[in-house]
Image (cartoon, rainbow, N blue to C red; front, side, top):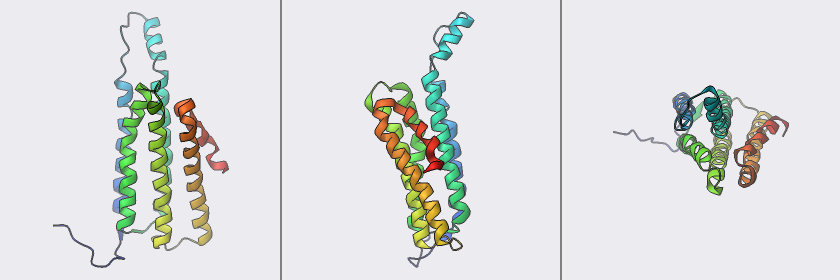
Length: 196
């Protein structure tokens, strides 16, 4: 039987959501490597054949590394947020769960980027996936601040941390706009994340 909250302002400790989120990120990051294992090296009869086959994996390896690094950035943001978030309400839990839905889609959209980068959808779906997940991370922070889930946070710190999250949203939005032209290379924009 599911226990219902009796009061609309009822909240729960954020620790359970934090642990669950950590696990989902870890699994998604681990599953990314399956995109590499599905690539065939073909017939290898010499070191030269093996070197050529490995060289042909450049795009799949690039897609794997980019996806892994952006998942790491998202997880580090989650860690920083949950250092402040003490309690979480139903809306906050649902925002987090929808973001995690997008996180678990990353291995799939990363494999589409690897296998179908010559098509527009193959180049665009991974950046769109990350954009939506990053956007929901920012929404989750804004919701936590607005709902009072962060009791010890000054207004200035809340604004500063919110701006940092917004810069990631803006950068990932620009990456989506550039992805039809350059694919996942657009994620290189994240090197500017600390500058915004």
